[in-house]
Image (tube, rainbow, N blue to C red; front, top):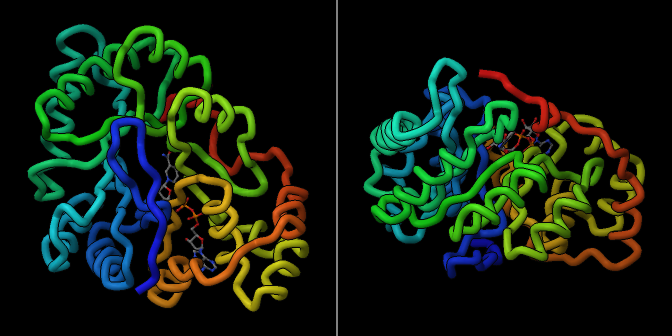
Length: 284
Ligand code: NAD
């Protein structure tokens, strides 16, 4: 089985640097996909309440035959626009959402709970973070973090709370490498986790410069991109429902990109996102 490096988080917990993402995987398909992933050697699984596949994901975890403490399970709080997330009421709503996720996953504790989007226009993420601090104190979640936060929201959290998010999960791939945010994370002990690490399997995987690097190493472009994430110190959570690709995406330990390869990959940066800009994103 391939050995995947771990990243030590700011609270001492360790997260495998490669995990398995299940966005857009229907609940019924999540169980076989996650089962295949765990069999292949993935130990970190990334889901979210809004993916509506926590039950299928949990089923695979229960049937995997892998000790719970060898797995790293992440889910995310969805911010429904119909709820009031301020004050005590908001904190109760967070607790309810957390309980529902834990029930659907069939788990007694979670390794990581994330605020899915900051929705800065609502000014509620600080209150939500207070609820996350309470969950952490309860011991039913080992680590808390955020997703899609920008430096302005991170600065607000750092100012208001003594609990520093262990990581920020953001869109990140060679087209959109997030230099500024990564530097901010490094300065504050926050790990960087990449969503859509393969650029959603779109144009990125046919970039001629990447095809060339892949040919040089006798690897696929997806493997080269994931290797780039690992060598950049980023945690990546690629998604696939195809068993051969699930295995391929984990098999990235046996080669190394040199400085020339890293420069060729850096040169494909376009600065273009695939997903929405989190600063204005208010979907619910
Ligand atoms: P991804 O970059 O992981 O790309 C997945 C797609 O790439 C697959 O659907 C498939 O079409 C293709 N693919 C996968 N492996 C391949 C291979 N070996 N060869 C060729 N094509 C391959 O995109 P993603 O699913 O958007 O992101 C990964 C995970 O990140 C999600 O599943 C989810 O867990 C998380 N995510 C989080 C957020 C957030 O807001 N926090 C947003 C999007 C995704």
